[in-house]
Image (cartoon, each protein chain N blue to C red):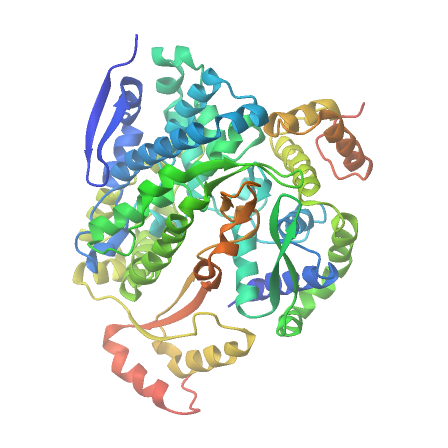
Length: 186
Length: 426
C-alpha cells in the first residue's frame, strides 16, 4: 500500500468526477495513456498495442480496485449496437481523492486538460487518436521519423477498417497541437 | 508437397502436432532451455506434483491457440474478410504466425518463471528506470536466437516471415499491421496462454480448480464486430457464455488456492533473495544482444546447483532445509486507506521480527475494452460484455492483500506481540 497505488486510484476518481458520469472504461484507459504520454504525468503503467489501441490491464486493475472500495460506481448503458459501462463517483470517492491530495494538486492542470480535450470523443475516436500517438511514440523511441502521410498509413495498416482521410485529418490535428514527436518537418 | 508432421504426447490434449519447421524451432538450444525452467517455481513444496516445465506449456499454448484460431475462422470468415481483408491465403499465413508466436511466447522466461522476474534489471538506457519484462526478454531471444531457423527454413518460402514478425506480435507494435487482431489469442482475458496454464497447472498440481469447459470455448469463440467505430474483438457466441464464466472462475480459484498460497509465496521470496546472492550484481543480465548468451545460460538447474552448494546465502539455506518464513498477519483482501493504520500498527508491534512483507495482488476480470464480448444469438445479434450477463463474474472483487511474514523460530514470540493491545515493540 504505497503512495503510488493511492495516487493512481485517486486519479481515477478525479477523472471520473471531471467526466461528470460520462466516462466509460475505454475512455479512462485512454485518459491514463494521454496523461502519461502527452502530459508527462508519472504513471507506472506499461502500455502495449492491441487492435483497440494502447492498453495496460493495470489501469483496469486499478479501476476494479476503486470500484471494490466503492469509490467509483459503474452503470451498464445501452448504445447503438452494444453495451458499455459509464462511471460516476461513489461514496468513498472523496476519501480516495483525499488520500492522493498532493498528487492530484500537482497534476490538476494536466488532468483537467485531458478531460476537456478528449472527454467528448467516442470510444472509436479515442482508439484512433491513441493509436496514432502510440505509433508515433514507438517510432520516436527507435529514432525513426515519418511524414504525416506515412504515419497515417501505418495506423491504417493496423486498423484497416479506418478511413485514411479521417486518420490523416486527426494526425494533422495532433501535429498542430504539438503532440507528435516523430513527424518530420514538411 | 505438405510438410512432414510430428506428434508429441500431452497430458491435457492427448497429442500435439508440430510441422517439420516447428520441430526444428523447438530443437534450438534457446527453446530446449525451457525444459529446465519450471512452470511454477517451488509450488511443488506445497503441491508435490507441480513439477512441469515451460517446455510442455509452450507446446500446449501453440496447440490451444491453433484450436481457437480455427474456431474463429470457421465462424467469422466473412467479418475477417470485410474488416481486415483476409483471404484464404492470408488466413493461412496468419495461422502460421499465431502458432509461432504462441510457441515462442515464453522463451525469455527467467529461471523459476515469474519468481525470477522480480530481479530483472532496469532499463537505464531508456531513461524510464523500469525493469524489463519477460515479454521483452522473449522478443529479444526470438530476434537474436531464432532469426535463422524462422527466416531460412524452406517452409518459410510459403510465408516470408522474419523473426521480427513474431517478436512484434508478442510486443504489440504497429509493425504487426493487421495481424495485431490476433494478439488477443496470445495475450488477453481469453487467451491460449491463460487457458493452457490453468488446465496444465491444475492437472500437475492435482487440483480441479483450474478446469473449465475449454472445448465449449473452442466451439463458440468468434470475432465480434466493433461498435461505435471501435475495433472488432475476440469474443464468444451466447452459447459459450458459461464456458467463458468458467474460465474466469478457474483463474480466480487457481490464484487463491495455488498461486497465492501463503507458503508458495514465501518460497518465491526466499528464491528472489537467494538469486540476489547468486547472480553477479544481484540481477539478471539485460536482454541486449551482447548479454543474451549470459542470460540464457541461467536456468533452474544452474540456480539449484548454486543453492545446493551454499551460494544462495541464508535464503538458499531456508529453501534447502524447507525452513520457510511463516505468515503471521494479513490485511483484508481489499484494504482501503482506513486500513493503512492497522497495517502500520502490526508492523510496529512486530518490529525487528518482521522478516518480509509480501503482497498478493490480482484482478480476476476486467471489464471495458478487454471485457469478453458476447455476441447475442437473437436476430439483432448485439455485442454485450460478459460482465453484463454474469453476476458471478461482475461480483468477483480484486485482491490487494499485504501479508506479513516472520521466521519460523520467531512465530510464537510474534504471535504474542500481535496479541498485545496497543504495545509498540518497534
